[in-house]
Length: 116
Length: 108
Image (cartoon, rainbow over all chains, first blue to last red; front, side, top):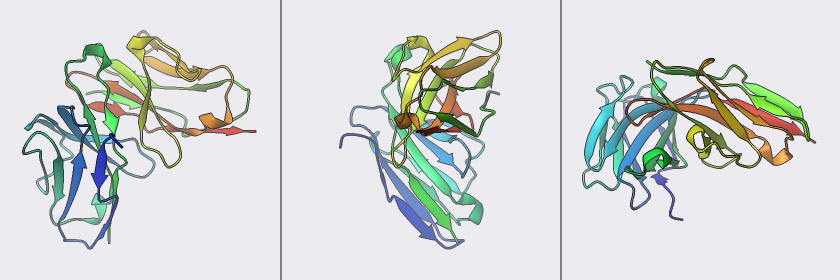
């Protein structure tokens, strides 16, 4: 499968614990995005990278959230001191910049987080 | 700030009937509009984008800047069209702003 992959697919944690998610984009894609989706809502943008540079962060991304893409390939999203309100599906997407109007974000299957 | 509204949470139609999913947006500039679809147990995938002006799986969508709408239409719904549909806007920058989604149920 050459699509976007995410690990783990599911995570259950206790409030206050730290969690880390990983996203592996499509290999030649230089842009990588993180979104969060809660029940009954559409995905909401969190942050995105072009290569290893984090170019935009949403106000939704509190200080407890940090994302990295150290070598411009895979990315990690860490949530520190998790809260019950962090329970959501975390989606990763990747795209290839420079394709003009044809740039398409391809989504991964998501990581479902449940904070107890 | 940009915003996307999908007023219908659920659309239930019979097979062969027309289906129209509404999408309205607010953005002061020139947006790019997309429809994404998520079939059961599958990931979110692009259905179509307004600049392509193409029909995908029988679906079309026309950008109406005057009404700030990008409604998705199909003249004859099929059972395999049952899915969750999201309208999305890309404004300045590269992030997508999604609507809340519309669940389409096509009954036999």
